[in-house]
Image 1 (cartoon, helix red, strand yellow):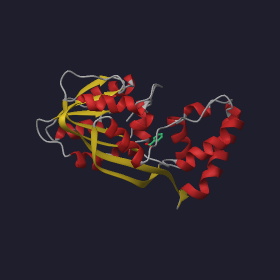
Image 2 (tube, rainbow, N blue to C red):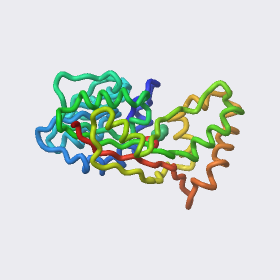
Image 3 (cartoon, rainbow, N blue to C red):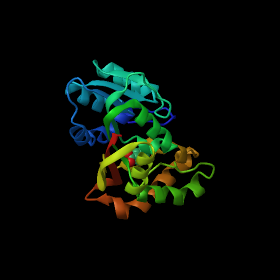
Length: 252
Ligand code: BEZ
């Protein structure tokens, strides 16, 4: 699931953030891969969903910008080709029948570069099935980080994730020669395991805002949890305020 330049901790990602690929399983059903089809998995992370697509008999290539993720994917899933590649620059001589991407495209800027790659990687009539953070995704978490960052980590900036609306993203696809067949924007409150789930989420996905003297870390995270508890803590469990944009489109 990754396409950012910072190093990912592939083990931590699989241990504590397995929900990222687990929640992508229904997206594989929507893709409905067929035996013999060539499928590109963009931002494949540790390769769990690539392997699931391959299990349907498809020929899968998984790409990810993180060498750590690709090492783990190669070590875990035989029968799938994995490559370290930046989605903005990836090109292939052998176009694909279908493209798949789960929980990655919100890391990619400019989004037009990803759209161009997707168009060029698809055969005419080929389809793309993607899901990532849509407008308002992790809105409470972002608001709390923006509130605390100037006080605790003044030199950092909260990541500028790309969370478009349906209209914005489908217009971008259309301009890039990809015709939307269906698009949804929907809430998916996502349980974060353990009492320290919010801390882990922020350390994994927004580490730049945690760069502060160690003696201030405890105060920062306690204040962050205080900000978020009223909205995101229910029945002894943290729920991240995920909102997904899911799109099926075809290369015209
Ligand atoms: C997401 O999957 O929605 C997401 C993950 C990490 C950072 C921002 C958004």
